[in-house]
Image 1 (cartoon, rainbow, N blue to C red):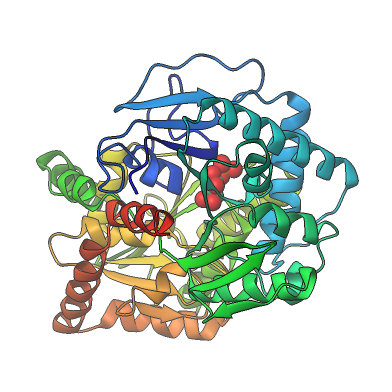
Image 2 (cartoon, rainbow, N blue to C red):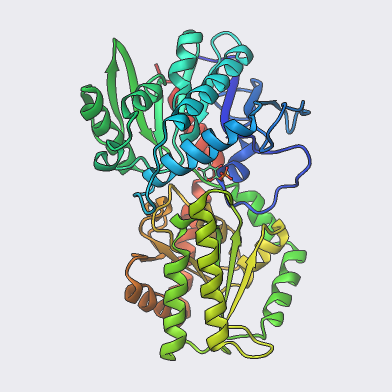
Length: 465
Ligand code: G6P
């Protein structure tokens, strides 16, 4: 069945009024405007994107970008505090990431979550053409599918969760667990990054709502009052062609050479790029590096570590504390092991321009992506896409969604500091033939599954009867 239009609904718009795209640390910025009319399932049908600009106050009006009409949703300061910082990022975010920090529960946050979800649903209901497809994304908006179905039963509604869906033992802590599940079940198709999340979701639906599901863990279906809701697994990806083109450009090559020179032409450059988030395992990684330097297994003059962190959710307490701890640890490593003119660790705490980021990817010998839990982690995929030269090694946490696809990375358990140290040394010392074999397998995997195929697969599955 051909649909007349698509409405994508996300907490943040993938573009905003003035700020240029800086570094693809997050799925909106990577996947962003690539959900577009060109998708096979859309056959050129128009795309509208409903989301928040990132600033509170009245919504501005935005011009269309790449053929996509942007419809901003206004958030007040209070919505920002209680919906975004509160329920989304201090209750759901830690709960869905293995509770690596303690989730907080406040009833006023839940009120704001409902209110903001309703606003998104109403704006979407107004914007969607008759029989349109609507694709709601991520943990900020889990109530939107059911609210939207009530307002507009003619729509085909999809939901995709970019973060992990936690095991029922954790999910069941949520005071409003039943409402959240019923909200998601307003969709026709519920998509996840990994099979385990899909499985956790159907189990939670069984336990909290007493609704059985049929099928296997990944592609199941649940009968919700006579309506069939399907689940599926669709690992999100990146714009491989754009990153390859950027990373292969002369500007990036020149900058990568300069970066290595500025670092003192060391034998090995280690690199990490993360949003400043406690789920990313930054402290564990710094500890492993400090011990390697202290043990003498790694010599600061030969091996330098570049850690880039992008400030994030800075007014949420856990984030503030994390930043202080990371900066203290970086200071300690440099204080103990750096020398005048040569730091053991180079720490940048700001977003980078895309050319600079691509140059770092190209300059690195070993990329460390070691989150404690991550829905996907697109930095890992970007690094692989940027290595058109076939060089570089990827050390990857088994708890990143990307680990299911990037089998040829050096996989680690980031909680195991000794294992992290051993794996890092193995990646540094690997024979070139092995490193190249691994990178070539990783590249084949990433190139065959880019963000366009992700959206195509999801949307064509959404349209299945
Ligand atoms: C993750 C989430 C996104 C979110 C992003 C950045 O990737 O899945 O939905 O937008 O982090 O976080 P922020 O709070 O800055 O939107």
